[in-house]
Image (cartoon, rainbow, N blue to C red):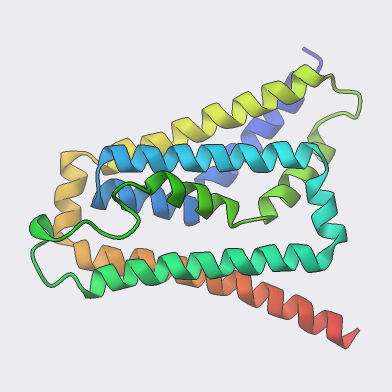
Length: 217
């Protein structure tokens, strides 16, 4: 019971972070509505695997390494920004090209056989996750915590991620949700694409401002 508060704190932090609208939510939602429930669930699996990658890497101090090697951290974030913009542009193109009825249109980009990769890369494109988890471990986990505590953390993050993003995939792939999507397909594609491009540009602007401050100092 000694480490239960630490586990509950990390679980709450992760759940709140997952619930904030971001690239993961956009990709899982979009694939569920445009392709199929299976595509949404495979994207969810990609998000879960990538989330665990960042959590485990943070346990081994990768977050601290990224902060100390500022050029590496900025480089990875720049690649992440480029990927988010790339995904957003493809969503925008899907919306602009949707000139035929959605029911007969070709399957949108990011669907088909690669939704797992889409979810995986979307989550991996955010190296700030490693820094977040490193900070979270420092705040919530005592230095003397045994190995099983870290195993429990990985399990909790996996279950919560699967439940949250899985619920999104199931909800947005229901008949009612898909009917609403078919009515507003073009506009929802454009909104999803705009959000992804905006997130990518925001990340790129953060890097630009960091470099400006560094150059001025």
